[in-house]
Image (cartoon, rainbow, N blue to C red; front, top):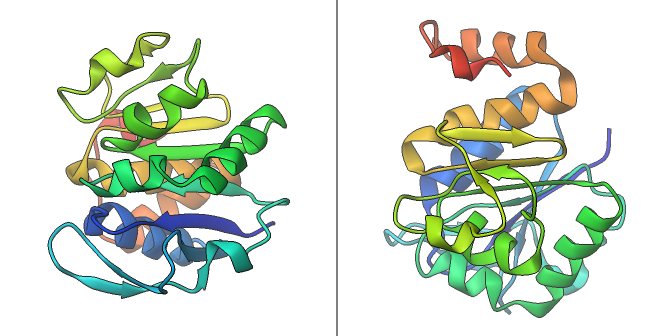
Length: 191
């Protein structure tokens, strides 16, 4: 299995980044955190500082399993402003690679790049108008082929487990959920 990359920009939503990394690693997936700024230290929307594993210019994402975007403001705007990241996302999608985004990032980053065109997708409430070329999902997590989107911090666990299910299967996702004592998850939890 190839490494997945989760991108961090100042103003990222901490829950949406850290819980996704944690859950994917619990499942045995390789995840590298990547700062899109000039510093490895990135400050979240709520003042939590995280030291990324690497900087974007030092990262080869050409054989990535997943490219993952947390939301948060202004984190999503800062991700969208990174032209190298936007090119990576477009290339990953064009080559049939896997892309995942949560909260504002589906609307602020993926939709303008055309990645959500014709896809079922969701995002943080109030940003739906940006998904004009998508079918807006009523679910908190939307899986459409190699694209997974979710609507916000409370669904970060389900978002991460959907990524695990997509890569390793439902049984692996269920095993991680059970290990975390997430016994009574809603039916949409099991993708």
